[in-house]
Length: 72
Image (cartoon, rainbow, N blue to C red; front, side, top):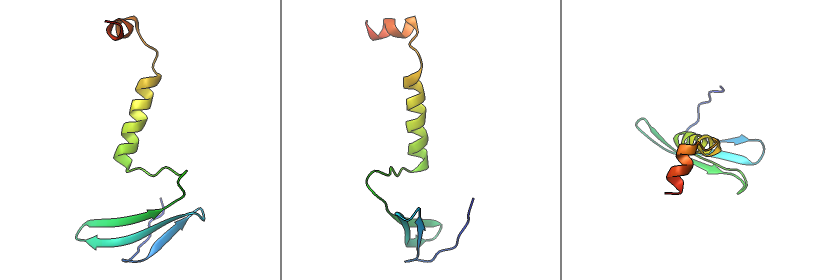
């Protein structure tokens, strides 16, 4: 992991097309602005984990019990 210090108004550039700017620092909370192409998905980590878990569940093969519940 790369750890960098930034102040309000300073930014990072990732892969020449993603810019992350520190917008505000308030106590222990930091507000970030992210500028990225539309085709680049940007998620909060907790949302990303939920999406991954949902995708894993959707990919499991249906059991006879599950199929029975669906068609009841």
